[in-house]
Image (tube, rainbow, N blue to C red):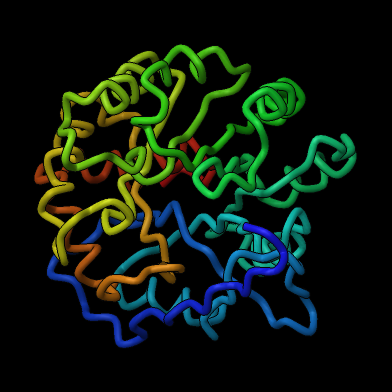
Length: 294
């Protein structure tokens, strides 16, 4: 996107969160959300892709209380560029229950990396879908630098663009996390080359993915039944390499705005076994983000 294009105005989430039928286990984690601070304290980047809805950290935590979620991972967006001040301040205010994923540049200092790590950041994100993020070769070099911090590299990408995903990212110095089930192509099915490469990556022990944001590539309205086969395939193949995320507040969504209570209930469809759900929602999140063990 060039600088002459007006940022998209995002619709807001449903704040009247329906109480889910599914009771989540204690310490359940929402491992993907975007939260924004007051603009006068945390200025927006001039070349941002979107203008966020007028929601706050308090709104996000209220959604958690309504849905029965205890922990959250805040993912830095291009709204603030590489200035991670807001997510650091949010984690400082809730150090036991929040973690973060930063945006960083190749020129970041070791001192700044340590500062982020000491304040609850557990990795950095690369956005290849919007073509605004780091190139793969730069991300690979940065992975070498953050390995000692225990970080991972998180990628937003379309797996069908990368049928060699398992070899391309499996050789990174750190483990990698693929957002939103790899944004699967529902028309291609679960046997598509890119999605199968994602499964191989998870089985190798070098990768993870997030059961999140079905609406990003679903061709249907809620409850996004065309995504369910992909979720089932991931749960069957690698339940110990999955986490779940709400993707709140669902920015840049042009479809029907989901109720987060419905998204929580969808977890039971994707992972019907209660013990598997606990692994995904609690145990895996603790391993990946360093939350205190339940």
